Length: 516
Image (cartoon, rainbow, N blue to C red; front, side, top):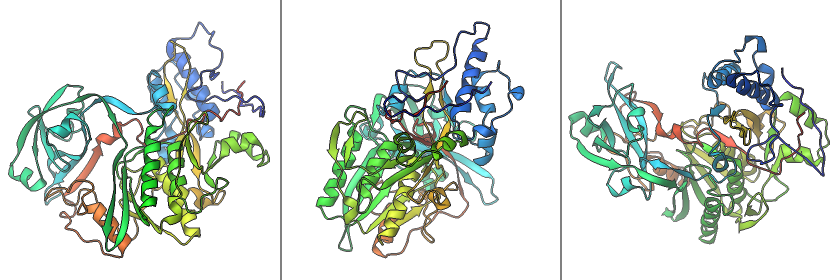
């Protein structure tokens, strides 16, 4: 049943099974009228995975597959090997409709929804014997311009009840994501007050049609006579293919930092689960020392069939270059080549770059760190990492779907490539499958001050920002930590964001395959 993958590389006319292209020819003929709808879709799923899945040689034998099963179940049945690599949580995903695919796969990907106006982390508070004493949701940040922002909720507030229902181990996530227009919440401003029952009640309204700017904060601080730039960036989003407003905004921020003489930069990725590779390329182009557009930003490798074909081609072959190699750039520009902004060479000026990361930091965020590390090392500059160990996702995707097919509206986001830095093919070019760990002695937890109340993001006394500044200025990490073992994080609302754990490409100029 698996079709043989045939490569026809051509400089003049190249086609590819790829997301967001109007001329997708991404399935076998669909004239099998005797197939049930599930069989039709599941055959397409298997063919797609057989072509492009990074571990296509690990797919189950067809005789063990149930082609009449629910497509989600069928897709999940193909991921056993991937799940074994990532502790039972494969990164490949599937969606039920491609109505929103242009916003996701063509970088027109602003986050638009009815929104709570804040993100939260679910936590279990343990007693001295290690049992769960109570459960609450901690507000990690309140979104700017949301209705919630005007109602006075703040980072660090602990929500214990929603609509008079006590939050517990089973409902902590769903209770705030019921699609309602408003919620009555009972909250305390810190853990100590929550334990004492000192709470407040407020009804919050969701914000319809909310668009979140991923650039949450940017500032310049003066610490010990050093100018330290700070950017908090929450997802790799472009904000619209024709104008790429967030990429342009970041370029302007970096230009301002360069003009102000910033030599130390803190790039805060603690809540950034990833997103668009192209946005990562623009960012790293600004931060890399001695930028040259002939220097590698990223190398992509594929499954054994695709990679075998690529490896047989000379490095000068245009198709091989397009598929495997991506370089730094001097400009923010669209896929059509329209230049929207110039990218400053801030990396030439920087002495130190410090990343703030957590267990929510993944994918394109990790790609950014990995891409820059060898360039900083080669120039004697420092990359510091403070916080928690990141997710460890060095693989990426693109969207696969059938255009204008009412019988099949599913979208696949299978893992299709592995990301490497300039050190490829050395093993260390992509050796962060277990995540990036913080520098020794600089492990810092986002919720450390929860018993007393979290400082607002951007406040110099906020735990992780304070630690990053100390790292850059030769200071020591100093803060009061909650009693060890008393707080257990269970997950986050960030998990529902469409960019979460995504490192995806939308390059429509990669058209080097014709599947037959």
